[in-house]
Amino acid sequence: MQKNVLWSLRLGFSAQQSVQIQKLGFNTFISQSLSSSIAPKMPTFLKDEPHTLADLKNLRQEIKNADEKEQKKILKKQIYIHFQLKKWWLQSIRTSEWPLREKMVVFWHNHFVSSAQKVKVNYWIYQHYTVLNENAFGNFKELTKKIIQTNAMVKYLDNVDNKKDNLNENLSRELLELFTLGIGNYTELDVKNGAKALAGLNLGEDKAMYRKPLEVNETIEYLGKKGHFKVEELIDQIFEQPQIPYLITRKILQWFLYDQPDEKLVQYYGDFFKTQNFEIKPLLLKMFTEEYEKDIQGHKIKDPLVYILQLANELQLQPVSDEAILWFLRQQGMDLFNPPNVKGWEGGNSWLTSQTYLQRNKASDLWCQGKNLKFKNLKDSLEDIEIDVETVNVQLNWNKKSKPNTIIQSFTDRLLFQVDENMQQDLEQMLKYDFDPYSPNANDAVMRMFHFITQTPEFQIL
Image (cartoon, rainbow, N blue to C red; front, side, top):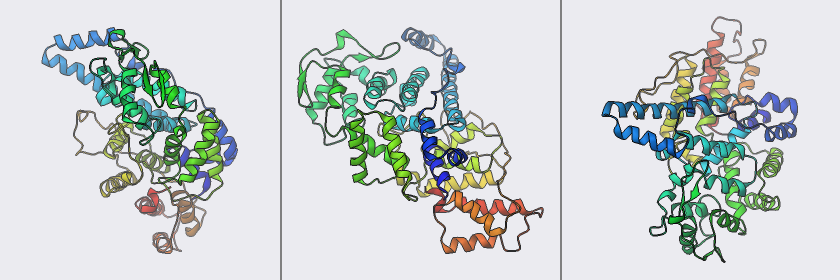
């Protein structure tokens, strides 16, 4: 696979930026990507959604007072707005000139997990997204402080139920286990005492706030230090621990480059990250520029978002149905704003089961035939949201002045990390030496070859 295509897929979601990488040079491309602007302002469809606690209280009272028919109408509107929020994010992912920021937001979304299905307040989910977007390339410690104090997080991890007379340890545990240090680097006493420090951190207006009647105000011991800690002091103490850099550098390596990164690399980049006071931008700059110099193809299975957007980009799909893509992502287990649990999407081999492989092939089948994606067997509360387009226009980019083997190579260079002798022979059987690029059926022949490539195991891997 051409290096500029490979890194366009790694740092984005398709080969769309490969031309920029080639034109600017990789280092310039990375620098400009890391300097990209943040997301646009709040979408208009959230304008009338509950923003304040008073708004939310009024809505819940309205639902309580309404009859069954009106209740269903109100709830259906909430579901519709949630779906619009997914579309809004997907459109930003698809159309961003510098998609590395959105790629990093998806990473953070899968690290600091919060699920819309549990939070149930669209504006809080938007706030959670905004914190991740604005701090995507910022400081890991500061991002941790901000995201832990979002309404979405305290609701999702049940800290709204964490009170001095009835402690809930969920947020305290995941702060240590999944967000920062990892298992083995803290004790159960740390979890219990962390829950005491977080007791009373409850829903607020712009962010979570402590409620004095629910707080525990006592000296605790936390990660070897005694003090009167609240949420930000807890996080300061966590970031004093020697193991703090390595969980996150491992996960970043897994997200962008290797499903199973070498622990020496984890240690190497983790040590550097600590010297940078946990600034994310210099870590990414160093990691990407150094790994770019290596031949590291074939170490990562494409996630569903990369798979489907690469396919759409290669086929020059028109019109693009965001509804259809969102259906596909959900079927593949990568439902935006709804990771399956607090651990997030597992990634790696879990992306390519026998079932998901068949689903990917079905998507390729339909689009290569000019039909839109539609999955009738997917039943849930969103089943009445229609796929907006039945047919699509598709067109492949290939040079009619080229010989068959050159056409084949142009596709394999940008689609496959390796081509063995048997595959090469199969492709040459599809575009034989006497292939006429000007014949009426030439595009169909090239499309059949492309379709075959997309259904190979090699196409699923970066």
